[in-house]
Length: 230
Image (cartoon, rainbow, N blue to C red; front, side):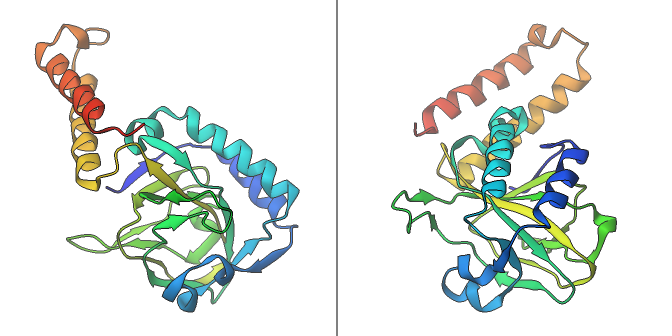
């Protein structure tokens, strides 16, 4: 599952957060990586004790919980605290898989099912720096406008290409989904895509009158009920 969530934040708000965080103290991003990922991570992150970063984490997380598309496709049970990262020219993050369990050091473990990158800079603000997600077919590069987010499986390899100009600014986090199994999440996502396609082609306000639409909607709801862990 690779899903774009547009406008998690208004573009202006995302840029405002990026500008405000630029004045904060940054530390070596390798300190938050685990295992072999530490050896390929070359970026910087806002120091974890930053009060300003804590406020922005709260604001963004509240927006995520209210975002209907995020709730529908991630089916979140828990969301980790966000990390605010920057990549200046020459910085990169090589091929890696994110940690299976987050928040261990804090004594509040969270299983990482879905990785999330929220872009705080526009693609024109920097060159290089694409998030490249491996798939069964071909690597998929992702560079989105400020305020947009992408969800992708924590189980797969991904990387950040070297930045060659400007500064790449993002917030990253992880989701523990109520549907633990990735294949089941994929089935529910594909059913939602089909429902969305049908809804946009049926007469406005009349989708509930279409028997096929309602039957598929019911099937998805009942599969979600069957597979969800709450």
